[in-house]
Amino acid sequence: MLIKIARPGDLHESDVTPESIYLSRRRFMGGMVGLGAGLALSGQTRAASDYADVPEGDAPAWLKEKIDATRWQAVTPSDPEQDRVAPFDDASGYNNFYEFGSGKSDPARHAGSLETQPWSVVVDGEVNNGGRLALEDLARPSQFEERIYRLRCVEAWSMVIPWLGIPLAEVIRRAEPTSKARYVRFETLVDPEQMPGQRSSFALIDWPYVEGLRLDEAMHPLTLLALGMYGRELPNQNGAPLRLVVPWKYGFKSIKSIVRISLVAEQPVNSWQRIAPDEYGFYANVNPEVDHPRWSQATERRLPNSLFNPNTIDTRMFNGYADDVAGLYAGLDLRKHY
Amino acid sequence: MDAQHRWRLWRLGVFLAALAPLLIWGWQVASNAAGPEPGRYLLLNIGIGALWMLLLTLSLTPLSRLTRWKGFALIRRQLGLWTLAYATLHMLSYALFILGLDWAMLGSELVKRPYIIVGMLALIGLVLLGATSNRWSMRRLGKRWKSLHRLAYPILGLVLLHFFWVVRADLGEWAMYAAIAALVMATRLPPVARTLPRIRYRLSRAQA
Image 1 (cartoon, rainbow over the protein chains, first blue to last red):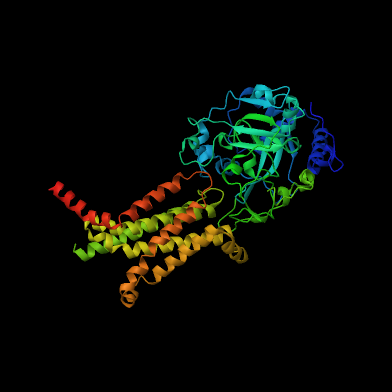
Image 2: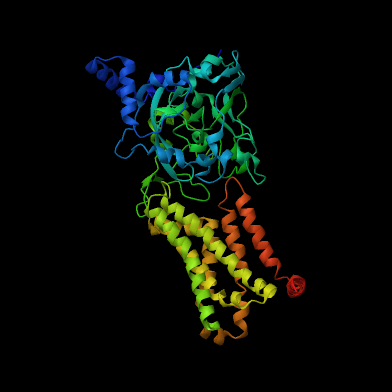
């Protein structure tokens, strides 16, 4: 049982619920009344109209069911003009997933054969209710939500992506963390047969890819365990079947194809910190004032862009989620804890 | 077809082959086949292209030694100038497509980022070599021309360092280019350089 004593400076859940969440809830409910239609029907039509040009996936029946019952647009960007959702082909064809190669199009090229069904996740460490969970058992008790988040890569580009998933907090609560649990550690699948990047003898990453969050970061309502995007299940190259999405941190924190979630007492060493501790820290909060040693983080290229319009925009503190998360870091020197 | 005509065709062929990648990448960008960040696509491809040009230029001397074929020496200046052209386009892609011609940013990046400084040094070296690649400079510089143009070797080192510092997760591709570079440079070590004509002799005897 986790006993959390709130410090005076701590935010209550009600304080950190983003305006867009409760506004969209109202909008959603208002829409329900106006339509007078069934919940599932409304959700379905909404998803279908938004993602008409997205290729249909191959989700198992239980996942299709969960997706159909999604609470659509539970979080939407506050500035929809600037934060326009990236085309599906860009979000699924241009990303980093080093298990499948180091080029931006390698994941899309090589991840197709990854076997994601069945999939299970080990929840262990400082928990009273751990064990190996089939993915459907991990996800089924929670309501799916659609969250349209900005994704800011540490390489100074960004995209806006509509994720589908469940709050990580709910999964952690069900695992019943003990009082010793202070951090959450995540691991990606290791399977060199399916993941060509793990066969490279020149890889700098010591597999498995590891990420970590402080427990309060993991419990934050914005932190999402995604199983889908663009109204369908995750494409393999985007971290199927289960990935983390932490929108106020650089993209590399949002670990893909998760097979293990451990509640731990000590701060985990994440993969990038292990490779280059002077370039990548544990926190990796988006911060325009702290440069990567090799490039500036003050701005970002919002993708897709075009040749003569790099679409450069100012990077915002905590990727624009400061109102929701700044309280987590009160008193922390963000220059030191980058 | 007389010999002079044939050599001209050979040089024209090399020119078109060196130009082709630029046309292909340009066409991919124009037809939206270069992904969501076409500027970076050009930047990276042209950068690797510049390294290829440099490696090809530096392989011409050992290849001539090995084969005695006159054609290799005839395209040396051209490939050297192609290296300069690719490197310049690589830098321009960075300034135009990544920084969006933000000169203040270019200035601050130039002082702050070691890999950019190293890349710039390599480019300055290439400009120096390109500017002295004409006959007039060769005559003016005399013996010093050859030692000046040995600058190509440290430039290759700088380019590999520039590339090395960009790598984030996997050194495989870099290691391949470094191995080719090591091979090209090894052919210039006196003992190896002396052996090349002997290999040619043996090969020609084996053929006969």
